[in-house]
Picture 1 (cartoon, helix red, strand yellow):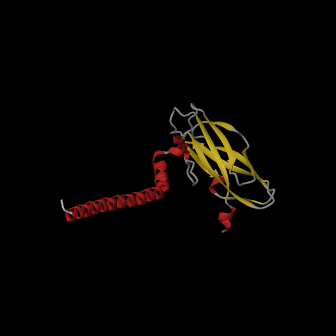
Picture 2 (cartoon, one colour; picture 1 turned 90 degrees about the horizontal axis):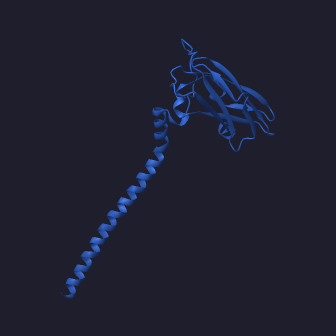
Length: 192
């Protein structure tokens, strides 16, 4: 083989290698953009999935209308209440009762206590979650402090109402629901 043939073979091999490298680079760039797009779309996709399946215990953010025709007095459901505050909010926040027994379809009123223990005014927002997640669709809030933001002045305290009922269509195998609220400081988001 002559030197010219060796140079031509070498150039052909380099050209093939460059073409292969360019294809790999294009695939990697497309993969990166695809991963970014998927990550960006993940939150709305998750919300749609939770709405369809009832998972994650998300409850409605609007008031339900009480239109139960008959209370199921043969069944008793225990509703437990849990509260916590996010790390950045110096409030005391707790249910005034830890649990209540209800008949499906029966309307109940419970209250939560909140006190702003800081020296500044703070606006709080409670975010509810129901466990087990599938039961969230059957926990109907007629009136809830979680529907609106709660402004409290420094050292102010308040009782906040939750009026609800458990839908009589709640599956028979669910006898206990846990309603959990997490309270967040939204002062900066509201004032901006």
